[in-house]
Length: 379
View (tube, one colour):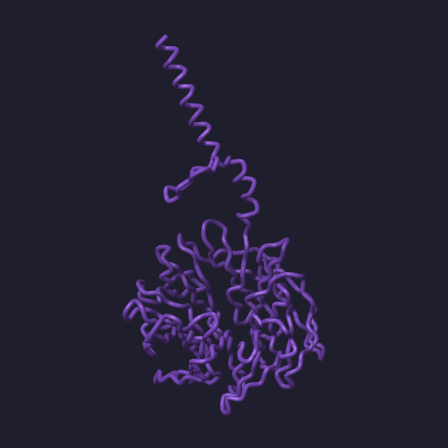
């Protein structure tokens, strides 16, 4: 009788273990009350909708029709090299932590700078990746939180932010990544909402955004040598204005921004750097301008409008301020818009109801219509 009881007890224990193996075990940080066990089969069925692979453009190669993308093969996103549209992805970084972004030197294809998390705490550090050898060099202190930063057009310096001074305030630093010892503090700031946006074409001025909230932000111009900062957009305690993307014109005389100044929408606006006169370029569009980029020759501004939840690509003639015919892309969301240095291709990310985010390139004709010739999927 005792042997029978022992056998029955063992069978019950095995059945309980098997039953437990077939359900999802909640983490220790969750308190489950009144929720029935979730079968593993359901999680496996849902997995194909949640474990999809996405990719996004990180940077164009400075001379060739190639790009670096961010995509995830294992647990976290890493940087991959794509040599041709639809070509194979060659993984370049292999870390336990995620790589947040990468940027080629605009004049030197021998290396790029990338940002990587440390320990999962979002204490991002900047590194140089040497293409020929695959060697990786730490450019920041390994302790503070740093932004990836922006390149000067000549590729001789990069501006980025760091909390290394006191672990709290975000200061501006300048470095030549080819020479890590060149790293220097440019300007001390108060608060955490400071981000370099663009260098003037001559490299003498650095445009920086001071982000207060989604409804309030300001642009500053910092001297690239002395670090002296000047508030460029007015600060009115009675009016909150949001400024988003910004870029110097190629002649350095105009600043292109998106802003909701005097509007309920984010509009593409040109600001004269001398007179500070505002010229709204998309007042006829009653939707938000999400992002934009100026072509290398300065003649065309490519921008994306969120039209009723759909990303629409538009093209603007910078000389006349008028729109050009633009290719119609498949319905979806568009982000990460970036001109190739040649001015012949436009890179961007797109997702839709049927596809996850992927990196694409669009070849643009050079004729008067500037119409798109073809859209090519990079991955």
